[in-house]
Image (tube, rainbow, N blue to C red; front, side):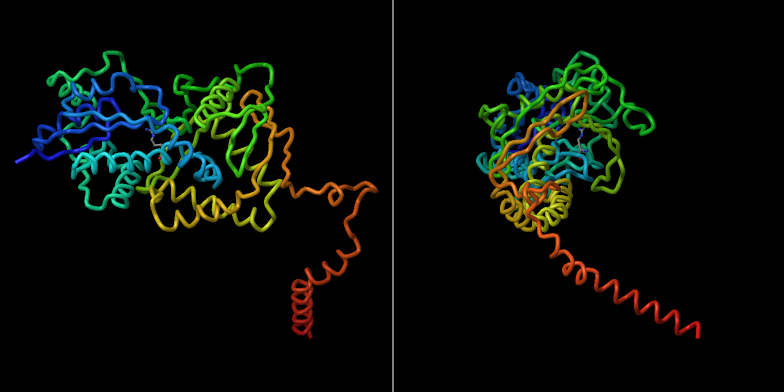
Length: 406
Ligand code: ARG
């Protein structure tokens, strides 16, 4: 009988390295290690070798950066998706794509089990498992961290040493870090105490705004149908554009976020994020929407943005409602083309200029000079009717009061 094949979501870190060996022993299984490159800088070197040494029969590393930006990051940007009005959702957007990658690999390899290294109290288990169930309903899912015998990092280290799995000799960072092109999430260690400000060493890609450049920098972003396509008049490939904006924003101390958030499993957690490109692009995109969208669409889209952000956070990317909402979002972006110029200075963003062939801003209507073409007199009739419900109500209350007194 052939061995059970298990596809393991492999990052190259301690947990997933130990998991490869542990699963192959426990289930006498053939392990296929699967890694997606979403633009994380750490741990991508020698991954195939690391997976093999850990006991994998095969290792697959996929460069998903373009797919990530085009099919996950840009839709979230167009939707204005910021969880609890703040977090640009880097990790949350990456998980459905990784779930899809694991399903694709499992199907191609004839595996019937997918394993991941998420803990039992986080959001990522939700995103992986709902994604896998939606895309490949016959797959079994294993999450060893929820039930294996190791109670600490040290115990995992001992197991790794026993089985000659190389783990970094350097003292590990006290933080748990997840990174992709849309941002970095940093938690654990001293960050678990919400009364303590994040120490400087927690931040990975941004300069402290206090020590950022003394000169401000102007950047001009060009959008086409809600998608950023250019910087300072030059066209960029989406991946390159994000890398560049992370670098430019990072050196001006832009994109640092310190927040308490509501997790899917019902607990509050404290996390810090660094997302220079995401913060810059959301800001610019929103400025363009203020210029271009009609009032009702703009207002309704705020409600949808919130809903989309919650659905992404809660692992509901591959669902019918999400798909429908994104059709709405895309429809709103039809005319979302134009330029936004921003000033970056010591952690702050300021809009300097916005322009679009689809701008609804009409100077002749807006001006208070004698160029004004707005029909002031028509406001008289408009206001009589607009205020009518409140006038009627006030009259009734007034007469009720008078009746009582008598
Ligand atoms: N809180 C974020 C989310 O749920 C990030 C989770 C992963 N964070 C980490 N530091 N490993 O999307």
